[in-house]
Image (cartoon, rainbow, N blue to C red; front, side, top):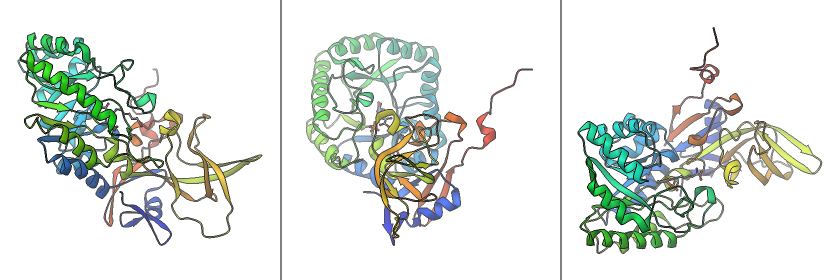
Amino acid sequence: MDFFNYNNNQLFAEDIAVKELAEQYGTPCYIYSRKTFERHYLAFADAAKSHKSLVCYAVKANSNIAVLNILARLGSGFDIVSKGELARVIQAGGDASKVVFSGVAKTADEIAYALELGIKCFNVESVAELERISKVATDLNLVAPISIRVNPDIDAKTHPYISTGLKENKFGIDIQTAVTVYQHAASLPGLKITGVDCHIGSQLTEIKPFLAALEKVLTLIEELKAVGIKLTHLDIGGGLGVPYNGETPPHPSEYVDKITARLADYQDLELIFEPGRAIAANAGILVTRVEFIKQNQDKFFAIVDAGMNDMLRPSLYQAWQSIVPVEPRADDTPTYNYDIVGPVCETGDFLGKDRELALQAGDLLAQRSAGAYGFTMSSNYNSRPRVAEIMVDGQQSHLIRQRETLESLWQGEKILP
Ligand code: LLP
């Protein structure tokens, strides 16, 4: 459930009409709802209270410092994949001791930065990385808490680009060889083995693959115990899907309950979750204005002011996200099947295809479920300044990222003497 609803034929973000926000801040813009972020985070955190646990929001889904701060105030931890994301968490008032560091290519500099800040754990993705962390920690006279990210070879049944737990994916260490890798880790200086983790993919709409992965990880935990390696946490990753187009993923509380139920005999094992999309996606919309209506023979296009540089998911993954009028037309404007396309010079520049809508130039549209992997994947392609981000909090709105200026487009660039 979210807080973007119609009232008197007007789409609202919490208590403010989206039309007013579009007039105030201009389009395109991302509009978020604080209440929705909080509600989704608490759905995980409250359900997880039945077990020793920590919810580490995956920063990559939406990394605006206002978003991170809202979650940090509720006690959230964070899953990060770069120095930049960690710096954002700190800037937002997040607690470094609740940060887990994922990602396949952590540099020595990133490792040192995270170690000095005292993060909770490094999720290690290869033997070479393990050795690098050991060296950096030893050089700094620090101890790095580590967990091995295992690849359980489970089919997450999601889009191939966002599936991560199969052996053909670049992520994690083959679970078959994990015991040996842990033994190697135990022999290296500067490391403290604390956990195990896995993340099998994103936008999963069933619970079964999570439970299958959990089974394999629990077997590994037993094997490790048998060789004298005792873990203190299990990180199940993120990946819970959201309803973009009629999918029926389990509610976060149902997902958490099923996992904690399986861990009833592991009360001492802290459970870590890394949800991104399930917290952020439906907490945001992308608002865009129709510039032109265009007809090529029997094909109708609504050309809007937001493009693939602002929202890449439809182009990159053929992702479907609902597109709705901010103020549905009550007049006799005819309905057509529109392709909603942007201004970028690429055929793949679309927000949605074949959307039955009654539109006129100047109308405002909202692309739903845009709060995750929307702004964070945006770019300046075609020299388009990145758009404004606005957080609505009840009757108040806050500009949480200003629209980029033209000058910002060439900031740091230099003409030859
Ligand atoms: N943990 C790790 C290690 C991850 O790699 C990811 C996402 C997450 C947690 C959070 O997963 P979530 O709960 O959001 O599914 N750009 C794509 C999604 C890529 C996800 C990458 N990893 C999209 O727009 O669909």
